[in-house]
Amino acid sequence: MAELTYRLFMVATAGMLAGTVFLLMSSREVDPKFRRGVYISALVTGIAWYHYQKMTVSFASGDFDTPLRYVDWVLTVPLMFVEVLSVTSKGAEYTQKVRTWGLAAVLMIGGGYYGEVNEAGGTEYWIGFVVAMAAYAYLMRALQAEGTSLTGDESVAFDKIKNLILIGWLIYPLGYLAPAVSPDLMDMRELLYTIADIINKVGLGVLVLNMARVCLLYTSDAADDSLRVDP
Image 1 (tube, one colour):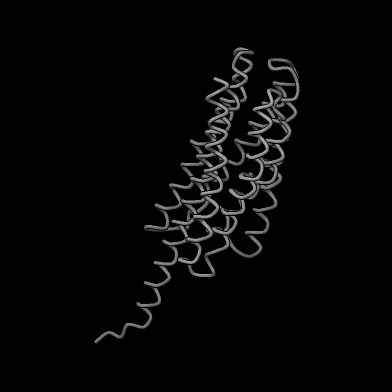
Image 2: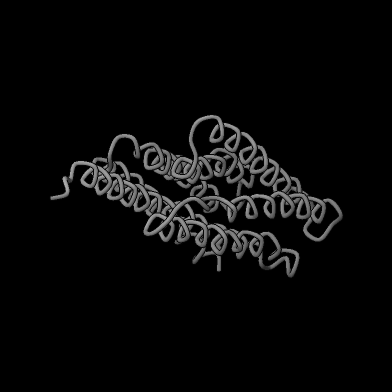
């Protein structure tokens, strides 16, 4: 298990770098007013690439630095929600949601960190889990209520984003709980966390890029219709 986990760390490092380069190059295909979400997506994978280099070395040492992963999450998870909101909200509504969702994300990560630095299965461990899952439930409920004004292909594209987060993020609680099932599953925790990061960070970036492309097509079609003169 340790060898597989280590190799997956290496895959994640390369995947985050590849995702960053792909998103930055693809941003040129998107209208400037839709690029913010794509740039933020590239920032998320870029930050993760930096940290996965360090996490790979740390795991190979045999004494994994758990706080290092949480440093990555406290930076990237709020940004992931900024990615999502950048394609559904604007103005004061956008600013308010970024603050509220960002605070909930930090609370979720803080609860998870508090639990993980204590003994698996102990009181503090379960307190951290409950806090993290309460924040998680709030974020998932808010996410599912987002984008209700979207229609057609825009709605379909955004539903893919919501489904990825809803399903992909379920991997994280499984990783958290693994050592509570058996102390021998500590490496399984890092394996599951790494799989989840690859799916959610790179995958979300690709879907946000697709959403930006769809929005561009809708804008172009609307512009064409406004210029069309009926005979």
